[in-house]
Structures are given as structure tokens and as C-alpha cells.
Amino acid sequence: MKTINVPTAEQVSPESQEIFAQLTKRLGKVPNLYATIGYSGNALKGFLDFEATLNKGSFSAKEREAIALVVSEVNHCAYCSAAHTQAALKFRFTLEETLDFRRGTATDDKLRAIVQLAKAITETKGHPDAALVDNFYAAGFNEASLIELIGLVTVRIFTNYVFAATQIPVDYPAASELV
Image 1 (tube, rainbow, N blue to C red):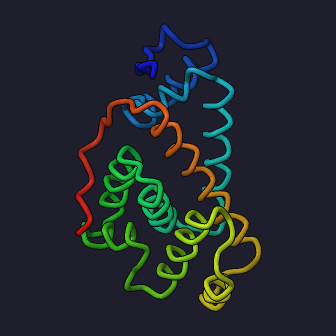
Image 2: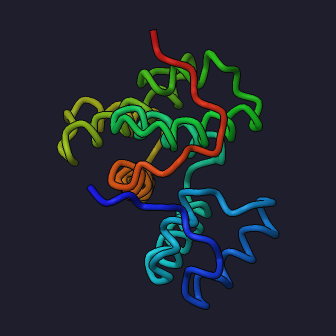
């Protein structure tokens, strides 16, 4: 298989270079995964726009990190598990909570309904058990929330698959192994 290298700004389109500059300003760097997606300026812009729009929806930043963690675990994505563990810790989740999310559980009822449904959607390719959907609604969510949850799962599947296909270096501390 061809080795995919993380591109430098000089190796990508002017559109991607502009996005790289914005990412550097916002994050202090261009994460390797975003840089790799930047081989296609359209893919990078589309991904970032989709994610940014979903970030304005029903779910808090903490809930979105829990979704990212469980989806990344199901898809065995070391890159996204590492990156989202770091993000979750910045949101003051404990390391044990991040591990629980990756297992598809949480002590909080609302978070548990979110991660269980996100896990099931990912594992079943969009065909979760009806009881998990009902539990999600019982936790206080509505139809808009369901559609946004599916969107957030989709966003993470995209990044998980980019990593799976490229195996670029992980530039975050490795996530702890699940036991």
C-alpha cells in the first residue's frame, strides 16, 4: 500500500493553505489528520463546515466529545481516540469517564442514552435497536436531536476512515487501553 505522508502547507491547494492558517490560529497547529484531509481542499472545507454547523445544535461540547469517543472506539481509530480523550480532559471529564464513553456507557442517564445510541448507530451502520432510540427520547431528546446525533456520528466516521486508510502519525498522547 502506498504510504500517505502528512502534507506541508506548500503541498496543498491555496484553499487548504487558507484553512491551515485558520486552524493554526485557532488550535496553535494543524493536526496531522486535518492536514491529511487537506490534500482535498473541498473535503477539508466540507468536513469543517459540517462539523461547525452541527456544533451549534442540540448537544453540548461535552456531549459531542462523548459521541466522538464512542464512535472512534467502535471504529478502532487510535488517532481520534487520542485527540478526543485530550479534548474531553480539557472539558474536565475524568480519565475514567472517557474510558466509560469509549465502552458506550456513562453514569449520567442523559449521557448514557447518547453514547449507547451513538455506539449502536455506528455498530449497526444506522440500524440501532428501537429500545435505544426510545431511551434517547425518554432522556429528553427529540427528532432534531436524533438527526444531529446521526450527523455527529457521520462526522466522526469520516475522520476515523481517513485515519484507517492513511495511518498517518498520531500527534496526540495515546489514549489509554480499555480493560
